Length: 236
Image (cartoon, rainbow, N blue to C red; front, top):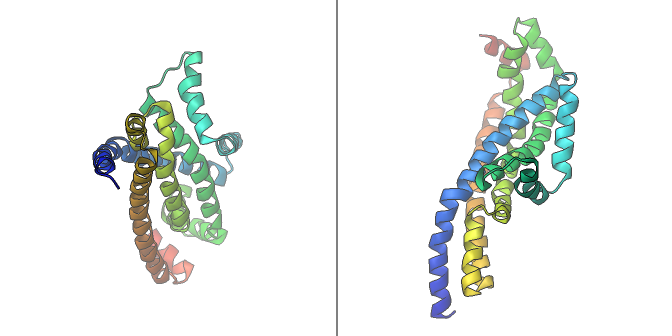
């Protein structure tokens, strides 16, 4: 490897890391937080079988899971201005990533909610808990533990998918690499470098995921007591 390439990679590393801290990581955190809020609402609406809203949530999930993320980004950033709706690049990316990821997470949360035995809900009513208390103290905690591995995988996938935001002029880590490639024509080395940075971040999230999964597994083992006793403790 020549001194020129080493110099380019050294320069690129600093710019890419700066872009990741200023744009890529905030986009991932904000987008996923909003996605989880959307997912929880959509899943709860379906779990409760709320008339009309349940059908609308299914429609939303169908549309956003059935169309490519890149097309959604282009439609929002380049298409909406034709309707008089103009969004800056970063807020546009946050909205699209939130809606797209929210659709996938909503299905994960719905399945996790439905996996909680119905008998626990009935037992909650028997000991005098309201519907809100049952959801907050019994159903949601168990559902979140069940959904955690899948949601963690969604977060890692979303981190990598943020590279698509460069296509709508978001100055993220991948766009930083593209700009340097356009100036130096060293596509292989620079794209390999940015790939390694994404791999580094994904590895950190994977290690955190495994650590938390072990803790949840240990917690679930301690919670293996009869459901009636757990419900009694919750009511206290």
